[in-house]
Amino acid sequence: MSSGKDLFNFPFSHIYVEKKVTDHPLTKSILARYGKSAVISIDHYKDVFNRPRQSYGLQKTSPSLILARNTGASVFKGAPVCQDFGYDYFYYTSCTRNCIFDCEYCFLRGMYGSGDVVIFVNLEDTFAELETLLSEHPVYLCVSYDTDLIALDILTGYISRWAEFTKTHKDLSIEIRTKSFRKDFYDKISPCDRMIFAYTISPQEIIDKYEKRTASLSDRLSAASYAMEKGFPVRLCFDPLIYVRNWKDIYTSMFHETVKHIDIHQLKDISVGSYRISSEYIRKIRKDFPGSSICQFPYENHGGYMEYPENIKNEMENHLVTLLQTLISRDKIFRIDNEENSRRRN
Amino acid sequence: MFFIVCALSAEAKPLISALSLRRDNRACPYDTFFAEDSSSVLVISGMGTVAAASATTYLLTRFGFCPEKDILINFGSCAGKAPGIHLVNKIHDEVTGRDFYPDMLYDLSSCGLPLSSEKALVTVSKVVASLEDPSLLYEMEASAVFQAAARFVPPHRMIFLKYVSDSGTDDPKKITSALLTKWAEKHISTVISVLDHLKDVTEDDGAIDEDLFLGTALALRLSETMRHELHQLFVYAKTEEIDMEKLLSDLEKEGNIPAKSKREGKEVLDVIRQRLI
Image 1 (cartoon, rainbow over the protein chains, first blue to last red):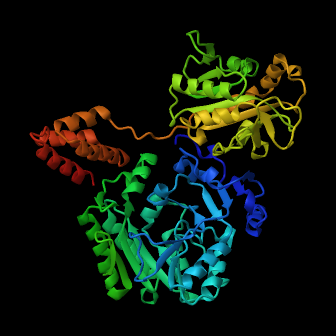
Image 2: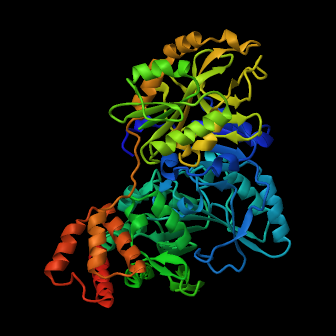
Image 3: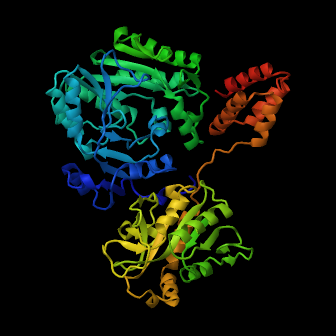
């Protein structure tokens, strides 16, 4: 894009509201926060979200917000490339689509045709769907899968609602993945050992280059540390590991920075994984982001998933695991084995 | 380039003059005007959806709309309660019941179009006698311009600018050409300001040095699949600002290029990959 920043509207300058959720309390509370935005009434969120030929990249500069009712299923089985941490019934839910952050490698760029953010205001229906599933078997659920729920919590209040729901459903464990700095909400919810907060940890150089608008490394570590202090199980995700020429230096520094701020022994567990993405997604991403080195990297296709060449992938993952093993037992470190599309503990 | 669609000559006249457009004297199915410096081209579609759709298609194909660089503008009059010129954020087609949404990415407040000036619009099949919903604008082409353009134009490259000429009338003859031109003139500075504001909105098309790529693919005797791999390496090199010409010239000096066989070409392709990453 060749023009200046003032070319674009402010984020959420336009809020599209499905007619059927106009009177929903969450719709009203979100609209009350955005008095200066243009509010546009729509029949169905897909009329806006699924428009052909949208520019995901430009929309991330000035995303619109779409408030909608999810009328279909909202709980799905986890994808093979996602870490399941040994849980048998691994699911994810999609109560929000897209994220206010702008990570250059994000799979959502390949999954969705739009960079706009959709909030499904009817979380109560997701809870009902989940109760049906819980009547059949225990569930391990990623609730911040298609978004960063903590980053959007100031609008939705979903973290406390998930906290309440999880506490009262003994067979439910949830993971909330984030790159946010926010920690104020930890004071408003009571600790639950089935509510795992998972922080993506990246070197500051990677954050600056590829994870736009996300919290700094020190802020993420500070938030993770605070969550542990408050009694929540915390997971650190060194995933995705991103290859750059000086990867060894920056990931080693990041490791030392991490252990300086976090009591590694108190962590629930750690995941380590180099960047990987479905070949279907990368095709779209490469077309949409021709100038992105991370998207255009010559990955190798392993069973439908694009990965770094074996030597790079192993070297990066092994390096970090070796560092971590000096401080934490092997059975707390999770890695993914994509070749067999199965998971293993390292 | 700006591709501008106006329904009537009377609406377009001040814009043609302000942009110093010249009539295209070749045999054109529509009155068409263009700027000498190729910065804009304008078509007079005529009234109604069928005319608007066909003229839009004509304009976009005849002058080769580029989705990474060009912008489509539909400028014209409408019926409405709030006077002035409005940026349209929703278009409802009264006949089909369908809705269309231009992507509202750009902040045009400095051009005199703040968010509060935005309106939803209804495309109707005849001049309205009264405003069914006073909060909306009513006109006769926008939904067709959008639908025809959607095949070529991304939604963030469509701008619909409508100025209010009346609040509905039983007698369309009362809205004369002279009046339409007079009201259009009042808003030309806003339109020009929008064009100026958006003139540099260009996106990366990922182009590589095609001659170098094709020459290398040939010299390495690559198969179709290997050509795709080489193309990907060229694109990656560009993103990392690696001098591909130098890298290939080094390989040539080392005697790796040209390759004597496809097998040898594949080996050189692997060397290129290794040097790039």
